[in-house]
Length: 171
Image 1 (cartoon, helix red, strand yellow):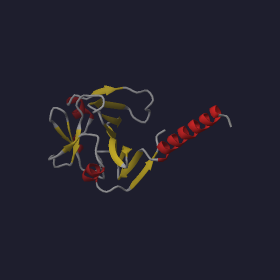
Image 2 (cartoon, rainbow, N blue to C red; image 1 turned 180 degrees about the vertical axis):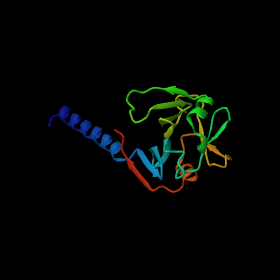
Image 3 (spheres, rainbow, N blue to C red; image 1 turned 60 degrees about the vertical axis):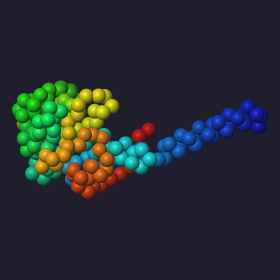
Image 4 (cartoon, rainbow, N blue to C red; image 1 turned 45 degrees about the vertical axis):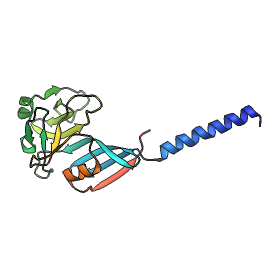
C-alpha cells in the first residue's frame, strides 16, 4: 500500500469510527406516562425534555395539571376550552394537513388541537432556543410551574413514574 493510500485508509477508518461512536450512543428519549408522551434530547445520558403532549387533557382520566401564561394567568386543565383559550389570547392556526383536528389554537410554545369543541391534544414545546416567553405547566395546586426543557425528575414530579421509556437515535 502506498503512503497516500495508507493515509486515506486510516482517515476513512477514523471517520467511520467517529461516526459510529456518535451513532451508537442514544440521543433521544421517548417517555409515556398515562396520557402523556414526552420527548427529550439525551446528552451524556441526561434527559432534557423539549416537548410534552397530553392526549385528551380535559378527560377525567387525564393527569391533574394547570398551565401558567406569561402574563401570570393560571388556567386549570378543566377550563381548557376553545372560548377560554381564545379569550386568554391564543390565536387560530390553520393547517391543511391535520385532518383529524377541526381547529388549533397556538401561542407561547403551546398548541391546542380541537375536534369540534373537544380538546383532543395539548402540545407544549421548549421556546428557550427561539426566545420569547413560554407557557409553564404545573400541578393542579398551582404552587410551582415548570418551563421546558424539563429534567427527568421534573417530568416525574409533574406526571408520575413512566409506564414506558425508550432511548433511540436521531440521525
